[in-house]
Length: 195
Length: 215
Picture 1 (spheres, rainbow over the protein chains, first blue to last red):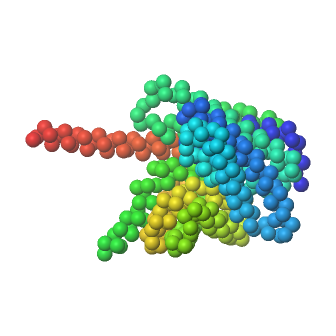
Picture 2 (cartoon, rainbow over the protein chains, first blue to last red):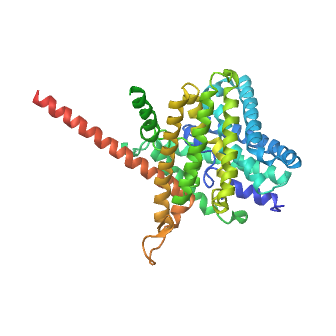
Picture 3 (spheres, one colour):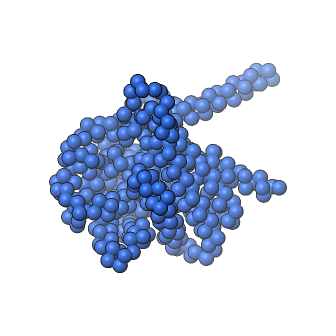
């Protein structure tokens, strides 16, 4: 059993152990949807919600699998649960926020293949977190993901006004920005006990 | 003969022209997370290649049987099965490697390359070209990982494949093996490639201009 405190887990996953910038989970939406602030924020929230639901379901699924000694099925069960959750969120957004649904486009169903979501399920199992710890881990992860996405979107909006050399335009400049962001997040190392 | 050539094209397409890392920017999570050393990169690349090839073969064989409505779910289950196989095999072969790669082996499931290939290619092609394309794609991915992992290991640890390169007085650039290093090295490769492409374009344009002047 792992007995990290709740506050410790929350703080660690938001800042020094940020899912995107320190653990490289969920890079696709990080590079893909972070063009505009107004889509980045809802995308972050949607992903945070999926992460939380997936984490809770994965926790109970894992209890069930361990009980029946079926641990080798964990990857298959987790990914199926996640795919169903994403389907749910997609239907919900489509019904109540049709404009947002069109803006997010292909990236909404792609939350299913977002490493961050599966990553939370796998890491919380690997670290043997109990229920409240898992919940804290997933909430912190979701907030951290949203934070990274929003920061990146803000930077990229500013970038449109800047004069970028043609050679580094596109993906390269986004990666350099990501690197600098990641570097600055490393300054938080040590807060909350660190990794 | 022509089928042989087109099959070879399928292979090269994945390996070079549509390289998943440098051209299509897919599968970024393992690309940046596990490439702290060349050995890790190669093992991750080969594991992904195996899953990609095996699942594309199976999906291609089953492409007329899987109903269209549930295809994504079926693809994911097939991919997850092979990932579990790889996960347990690596654990059996080398525990050290298993600890180094950690949960990222299981995260192959969520690698966009796999679902992307399954949906865009394997589900529409007969088994032979689908498998070859997947194999080329996997090798291209391995090559990309190695390019990043090699650079990060050389600068971050002063070694390549665990062999010291610079002698005892080398001061390692620790930042290279830390997360930001991954971003910077990948960005560096992308800038290099776009520089080469721009150079080639300029040469072609210069030649055309020369021809135009002669005519």
